[in-house]
Every structure is written in structure tokens, then in C-alpha cells.
Length: 66
Image (cartoon, rainbow, N blue to C red):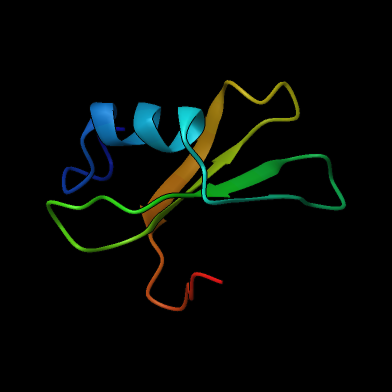
């Protein structure tokens, strides 16, 4: 994710493998969130419907864990 230098690839991989929450959008894309302890933040990683190809990733300021 060259466009988001604040996000490490290892964090994106962590979210994909260890999501706290997963939601499927109407267009089939999948949203996942997980806590990155060293930052104390929750990135949202959106993948294509295949669940593997990252479409977008960013720290979600509005995410509230259940």
C-alpha cells in the first residue's frame, strides 16, 4: 500500500488473518478491522470479493469495538 505509508503491509496481513469484525458490503467487498496494539488503532482493510486482494486500507477513527 504505497499510498498509505503509515500502514505497514504486516498490519494489513494481520487484519486479514485476525479480524475483530467482518462485514460484507452490498457490492461484495469485505471490510475487516483489528487492533494494532503498537499504534492503539483499528485499521479498516477492504478487500475485493475474493477476500484476499486489498482494495483499500486506512485507520478508521470511527470504529468502536463491541
